[in-house]
Image 1 (cartoon, rainbow, N blue to C red):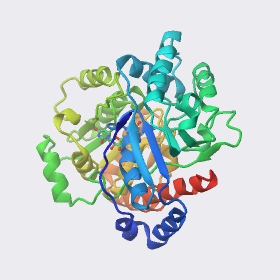
Image 2 (image 1 turned 180 degrees about the vertical axis):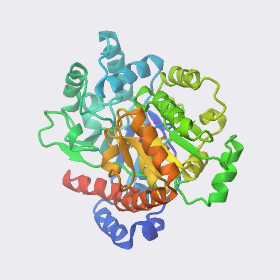
Image 3 (image 1 turned 90 degrees about the vertical axis):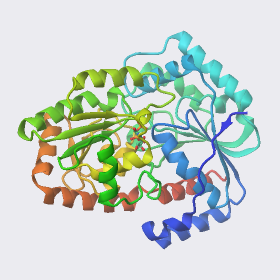
Amino acid sequence: MLQPVSVAHKQLNDYASIVGRQLVDEIRQRAERLQGKRVLHVSATAFGGGVSEILNTLVPLMVDVGLECEWQIIYGREEFFNATKLMHNALQGSPQELTDEQWATWSRYNEINARELTEGWDVCIVHDPQPAALASLVGEKAREWVWRCHIDLSEPNEATLSRLLPYLEPYPAAVFHMPDYVPAGMNGRAHIVPPAIDPLAPKNMAFSPEDAVYICDQFGIDVDRPLLCQVSRFDPWKDPLGVIDAYRIVKQQMPEIQLALVGSMATDDPEGWDYFNATVAHADGDPDIHILNNLNNVGAIEVNAFQSHCDVVLQKSMREGFGLTVTEALWKARPFVGGAVGGIPLQVSDGETGFLVSTVEECAGRSLEILKDPGLGKRLGRAGKEAARRRFLTPRLLRDWLELFEELEV
Ligand code: UDP
């Protein structure tokens, strides 16, 4: 059997005061027909990155509305995750292809996992490319299959994508964040559903400014001086080195500025450590650059504190499937500056709910504008919070899934 993930207990009713009674009622109504349906989510890791973040909320809410919903993790060793990380990068546009041997490794682990998958599911939702071959291997183990893609497929390495596509054929539905990400050949099977964050999770729940300050202080931040912060895995696409460069430009005009780079190490991301070390080297011992990860005990609460306290939240990505960290920042009413790529423009409208940038210089320039004009930061932050409330909180995501189940006649 695949490894089950035990999730927290959550109640949809608790969200009514945040997203409105109407949406909660609509969800309950849509769920009526689906009582007791067996829904399985399969993903590569229970920790680190956006997928686990989403499932930690979506799964308990699916349970709360009456589905028999479970989340299971595939088995894999380093050779498998090395191959799938390359695949992930290639699908987001990296020129480096997997070798035939790495494709064989990917298939072999998918076969192992396919054998271990239990049967009798009404719908099996397979997240991302790591376990994508499951539907082609053991289609009979679930009545319906959905492939849920969390990555940016808009400019993929075509060789890698065309080798993956045949494995996606057996899925009657595939779900993407944005229309741009839908590869050719989906023939009406593509559905567009952007992800969402949980406003009640420890990562996003309301903190008093004093609590946030108290936590940041413990990590060596001088809470009386301004702070830029980026929360994300240590990954070239997230451009932590570019963030350091932008901070250095800001520092020329504002010597008191500090930078926090907060990044967890995901278990399915073997590249993470190399890039972490490269980031530390680029920081070159600057005492005002704080590089923190989950091994320093930076968990959800601490991420919340950093996002709530800092003066500007950065997400200077060069590719970004969606970027949950963006909505996380908006929800905390923080001014945001981020790369105009992937899912970021979907969440931020430039000049209204944050700033979109394409270069290190622009990133530094917009950050300085906000730092010098707190009124501007407040306006952006407030508008951002309302935009996040309307579009990117988990109850909306749950509603979209129930709608899809209805369409698929689960
Ligand atoms: N995250 C975290 N601790 C960290 C770094 C990231 O909890 O040190 C979380 C972050 O808050 C967000 C998720 O991991 O919820 C990252 O999701 P996102 O969509 O931004 O990027 P991905 O990692 O999936 O590419």
